[in-house]
Length: 79
Image (tube, rainbow, N blue to C red; front, side, top):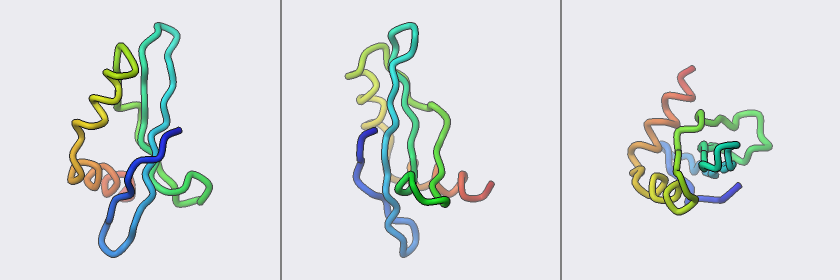
């Protein structure tokens, strides 16, 4: 689990983490966790990040812009 810079959503500051795992085929996969992970209001995406190597995975994370991250959070909270 890796801490990422928090996002602001309205007047809230939301903790953001990347949960990473290495799949059986050797690829790297990751999902975003919004919130501390310990609180009941924490929500997570599916494994939306993929890389053949760990640096490839991090490239896909860096390519995601702040407004996309806020939109992901908003969509998860609307469920």
